[in-house]
Image (cartoon, rainbow, N blue to C red; front, side):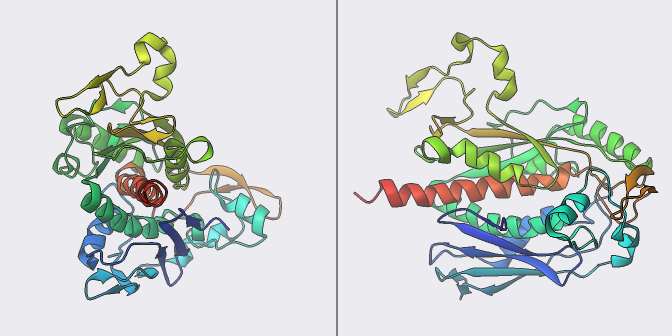
Length: 362
């Protein structure tokens, strides 16, 4: 029903934005992995609302509770359930949305599909659903780092027309977390902040691009044809709320090059490993990781719920006007960074287990 993701490392998220809580069930996590609530909480704190003046002012601590699957600090190999209880709910903010559809939101399509919807905060269509993904992603990150030394870092590359030039090979978590925009270029981050504040004060919203790099990814992850690594990465990040575009490596820019300009030439490094001199392929070839850094970009649209008055219709077919209430991000990009990282981690962890199962038996 669209609530589960992954094969061997499989997650199912649950809960609604203004219900009792949200969370995730993780099935297929290997046993004896040391994991603590604090490690999961670190990632949730990067995603939570109210963390800065350019995020939604909703006050949630997003404190995680591990309900099952962990004993004495280690995973059991059984399903792990993580719950985050909702605290600062204001369902009355959505009274206008009982009948009025928010332009470019999921209200109308949920009604068309199910004939019923939770209009309070959007229910399952709210970005609050991603809490479960980020919690599961924290565990996936731990597995990837412990087994293969994989490091996954996302950051804001562009907000509307303001774009930073970041070297994904050398960017650090400290640089990313040094400002509330999560752009490692401090000077560009300051310009982005000014722009977001201006748009917020106008009652509007703004979009942009998150870039994410996965470093030290083992060779061989991904499967040919339908389960190519980049195809699963695309599905993972494009399932995030407000995502509208995906690029790997050179992306659409690669279409401007000739084959002789775009091809990544091979060489043998000083350890005898086959490497590429450039990385326009973005870390995969033929749908399989080649050992180079995986670099992706995800485009996010402006937040759909805005205070500016817009024309819309009701669920009874009448044209009307809507000035949306509620607490919403004027720009989803800073909080989308840990969401993108989580989806990349979930895909890579799942493919790592699949690769071990198929190709490491003999």
